[in-house]
Length: 444
Image (cartoon, rainbow, N blue to C red):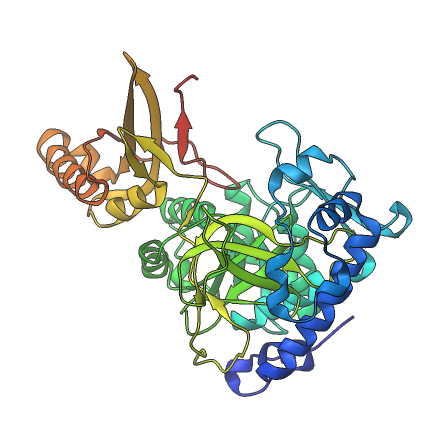
């Protein structure tokens, strides 16, 4: 399945990215045809799904229009854990060519499966992702997403190869080697989590390596939420163009949605993944433009169809057509999840709000950690923030000034006072994968 592709921003696109530009009526036809097929497959092959449909008095024939998708039951992450390891598979193991699993931070991991056709679809949507980020044949891609059971590394790898780019499968970690390869191999694009790339850029600066003087021009970043302020910081520090991509193992891995050259939301590859926005409380479908929880249905998945999977990611579908000409719809960048919220003294807090406050204050670095503790029955929140070497070495006055500005910025955004600890550069442990922002030491 090899395709040559050139940058569609230059005025042409290869058939592999043609689905991004389908006329809307044709796209809806493809979606409905695939929806009927995937519901039929799940009904026939997945006992849990069949039971849920029968309970509602539904059959695959109930899917007469795309709006009928709202009648179907939701799938949630616990369904994957409850049927661990293979209970949601719709293909016999003889047809499964790949298994991945998410890091089971809470007990058992979730296991996902792919047939050969599923792997081809994955390569296709990642190829379309890289094309949307302006990559093409001839690019040299350093893939610092983790290989192994995590879906990021191999998903990006297959996509970049299918695009015709040169892939360096370096995986995460070993930052000194990453910088050597970046410098010596003429790398033009890098894939990583944004927090890991910031760590890498910081380390390069310390080693006297100037990223701006290198051929590196594009960063493809995903696997954790990051803000526009963080993008501005990355682009200013390194001279690259930074793109946000989105995906999740339960649906396919990376390759569900991607920014394009406009940087105004992420295009969902909705010929394969049908998006809905629901009210997280009531489960009711909301119109395009409304903020809510993103729900995704895989339209072409064979090994493990996911019907109306609740992602817990909060976003909105942007109704307007994008300036890049793609007809597939966009979602707003995801800055928060409905399940990363915690409550302190009755106030809902998201880590992304702390990040926003921090990026507004000069002298701080975008490395932070939130520590939650309970003292005498009361919840306490302390934010540890790294400050720049200049601020840290200029002991008291500069530190106090930064602390005051930061305390004010956090209180302004959250509406509550929190503990604040300013620490020197590199005090907070760096992650080679997703950054661990919240440490919850409250027991019970």
